[in-house]
Image (cartoon, rainbow, N blue to C red; front, side):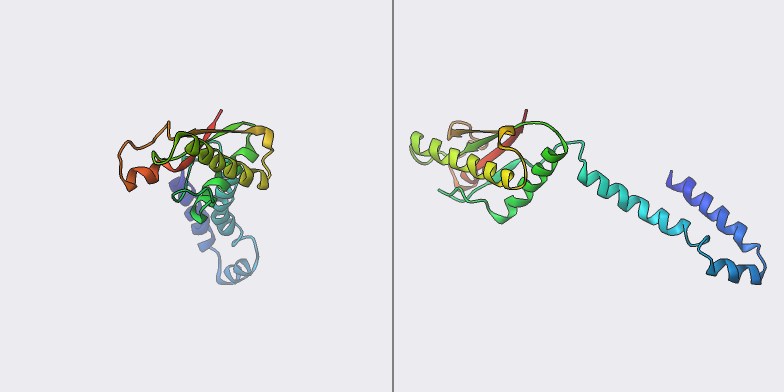
Length: 166
């Protein structure tokens, strides 16, 4: 499609090249000749902006990760929450935020920590304009690990909140 547009643009410009020098100078000062080029360039930017504001597919990144024994949203996680909130603003769907913890700590402690993590994501989403009745929170504590290892790399994968679309 870009090739055919370019061919049409070349044909239009080639037709302009047959004008006399006086016609060329008057045509170059008129807005008729420059108009097609800027609109051709601005069309992709407009469609990109439209795509961003009305995403048809939910964001692929849906996990928010935490430091050990913390439920604070890290700066890099803010972008994940904002992208998912934008999708929720554009679509009338509900989500469940699932809080998780690594295997260290008691069952009760990890359930409470997972709930604080899920609630932190919910709070951020409501501040971004998502009604609380569209967000459910649940904690799985250490019961739903993403990684099964017993080292820091695995534990860091398990300290998370997952945004699940329903």
